[in-house]
Image (cartoon, rainbow, N blue to C red; front, side, top):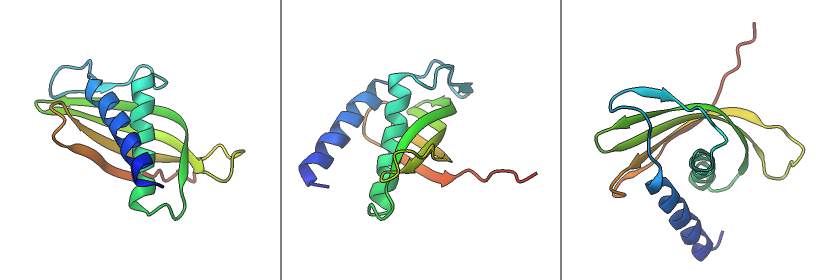
Length: 125
């Protein structure tokens, strides 16, 4: 990825994330009522992009959908925990696999980022 493209992508995501507001009261977890909301989808896109970036785009993923999630508001910002479906970018017909991710967003835009991105282990029973 070209540095300019990366910078534009991160700047766009930062602006969207900085406008995100949690509807929960401070200190509580609140279920996301509409996982298809534009801002929630942008958080998920950011998580997938940062996962790809951290793995040096060796096996890049694309976001398929946001299944569910929750928001935790704290004094300095918001934490989004999401269950997303992501698939390899070169397989457009794939419905993807489930991943759990968390993204921290600082309300003053000085800190935050991807906390984790890991596969969801399916119960075999």
